[in-house]
Image (cartoon, rainbow over all chains, first blue to last red; front, side, top):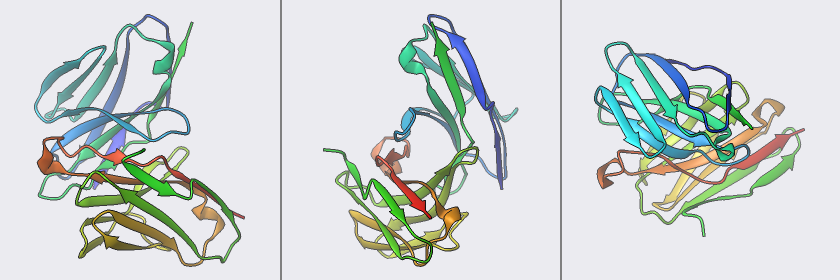
Length: 111
Length: 115
């Protein structure tokens, strides 16, 4: 089975940096996704990590440590529009893709 | 137009009624999914289909059924709706072979309320 843990809520200031952590315990692991979901909207893809290390994409970066079952999403130069829920999701090993989602971290960006 | 379209977007119904949520996609993806989202529980997989002849149960399939009418269409049915099926339902597609790393593409969601 899969167990994914991430903080329920976070608050950060506009212009600052925030790190959202995700830990997972899985019976098999292929990779880890991060999605962004604004209130009342569909989740949208942010990143996918398969190998250990940091992947940077503009203001957003995602880190993975497979040995520690740990990932984080780093958001720099926070903007008000970054207020959203951030979903960590694990893709299991094997030929099929049954992604399991964490409960999400609701980020509030304040002026 | 959205690549993944869900209808209806909002529905209020009564206990015991039959409900169908429809999903159609123009992305040409073989894999389609139905998730439900509840506050504090995140997204949970109800059913998934990897092609027209392949239907699989997810982690919470009890009380639901699906139909894959074509590559582009995947419907979710609640044969006899109950209040704890009140939730936000998402259809999604993916294509791991297309270079998109299997990311899910979600529809706009269907908010279902069962009274």
